[in-house]
Length: 335
Length: 260
Image (cartoon, rainbow over all chains, first blue to last red):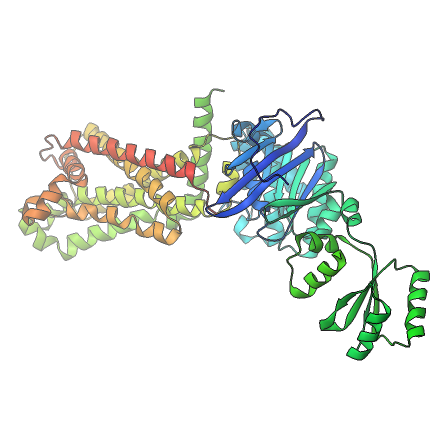
């Protein structure tokens, strides 16, 4: 990962097809604290991109820079063909942003909120009313169109928020943690909405701390940690980076545990829980062989479980700063 | 559409938004009428005879002296309340939505200012009504009333721009509601309630040189027929100066702050 700023101007980022969003060496710090430390991204038009990372990784800062809310300290960023630094109005005309904090006018009704957007987009009275009506129906808030936004539940607020973002039919949509704090049902509704947006050709840039969300929605995922992209690829590519399946054996007595550790010298040790992590595929034959080896050594395991890697493993491995229990598992998986 | 047309269109949209807020919450939007009315009643009925004697007359004379001062104070207080609305918007997510839209940047502030000036002027109607009910009599011609309305609009405009800056400079709504108090009470230290020459020398110097004294004197001259002298021009100069400071300050604050 390059740690220096790259000031050389490059148009379009090379010979590839034009990207909806591209950044080169994006940097941002607040005082001594470096929030973004050289972010390179390239997101093809019409795709869903997920920026995945723990709290404080720099996800929101990235969205704020790309949506022209704050200026980067270094590097370049282009959105929908416009440079965020030199042509912010061009960027603003092409994007829609739904932030982490609801951007509604609480004192206005749902319909008035949408009409406010239509007015600010200078759509004209008739077109504005038409779009507002369609969005109210699409987001299932037509029955509360004349209620004040302040009276809405979390899920309804999020839907209205996204509806407001869509009034202008943006080419690129930024969704900053769109489902944080939502109940499972509202989350699924939000996912369906995102999918329908992409079907219409919109590019979606979403940040999330939920792996299943990235897995479900994104064409490509970048894992952001400590201001750097630590991995990028499709969900499958990322999963492939993690060492294969393993079997976990747990014991009740330390003597038993030590004997097992001697019988499986390659296994990762978890002293605290008296557990061993034996690498290998979790297929039936391999399991039988493993159990035979335990029998042959006369060892009784108290507990036994087989694991195949999921995005959780990827995430914890790459961002490796979780709680003690999980980080132990992570470090050992890496060995 | 040209840039100017855009600016006007966006400002009107934002103004409509703020007026909608005011109509929806009349207690907040038009509450600015209440304080001046209460002050008027208090000063007329509780202190009127005593102060009136000092002004040279009884309660009736004092109503005529007091009303222009109350109106100026009401306009200052009304304009100042804008800082709360601005600060509250700045701490909500909606401001980030506005900032990421391709709209005229200043329209957010212009909308607040125009909306607030309209509210403040509407609020002064019942104040004048109550003043008339408690004995205020004006010999002003239609033209003088028009000039008075113009002066008050200029004052409201100036104070409101300053309030926008104070609202932007405040981190929380609580501090936004405290800051304007100083300006709201400035009319007390002028000729709004008692003549400046009745004050101690230090205070008197301050009273004679602060902006609300010429404003009060001008309004008093227009409505009650007293001497205006050069107060009119001094008032307009103050209004222009305060507007400019408020506008420039607001602009630089708005362009530099991102709050959540």
